[in-house]
Image 1 (cartoon, one colour):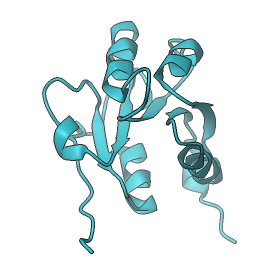
Image 2 (image 1 turned 90 degrees about the horizontal axis):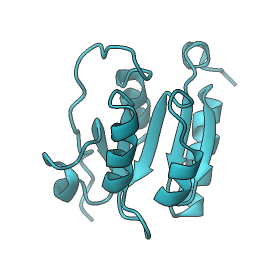
Image 3 (image 1 turned 60 degrees about the vertical axis):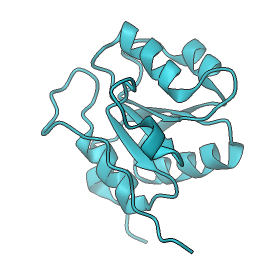
Length: 144
């Protein structure tokens, strides 16, 4: 087994927000294997309680959640820390890729591990300048 030392050296503290437990658990396992520290929230309101400026390098959130949608969570966080990197994971990328959505990048479900890794590497830690501005990039999925 090979450990990805590059990711371990640059591990980020990531807040993962998704109402589906299986999604949160899968992301937790994958991200921890990549060397990141993961804190989980089951919805946007819980994420707001867990979020403290400076505690997270990245927020990964689902879009369609009960109580508070991902774009509402992103707006709330960006009011506190405008430079907070936020990645949205959604099956509705075409709907959420607009001027009203304050996230830094969008990754369409289902997505590959390689696409997730690439997004995490492109998004800077809070307060760091981006190497290049990330743009919403829906993942193309195969039609069955």
